[in-house]
Image 1 (tube, one colour):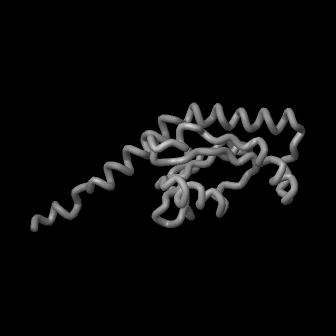
Image 2 (cartoon, rainbow, N blue to C red):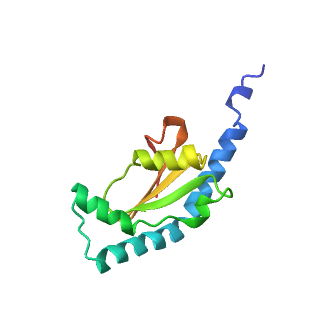
Image 3 (cartoon, rainbow, N blue to C red):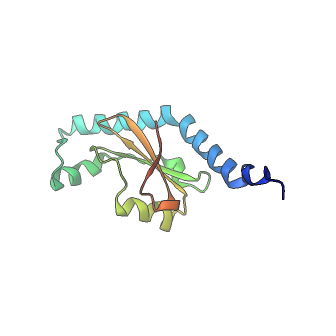
Length: 130
């Protein structure tokens, strides 16, 4: 075996790289969806407080990218109206168990950041921040 063969990128490497490039490419549209969530929060005078009732109310302003719910993408995108930079258990169930997506992308509205997680570690660690 040639010693360089072990360093060759695998098909998985290229697939993952392509998906992350697609996610980066969608960032302007994700930011529009985040602005829609922010507008909803302002219009409905919803609090940015982190108490359970405020978070429950803010879920009404959460926006989901409709294309990411189809089989044509390998990720889902939705907004978090509060500063929660990690997926909930429900997010994980919806993304992997129900939709069989490998990536979970979340728009954190207060910070205007987009974070991406992968199923390999049960969506625990951020693999991309935009």
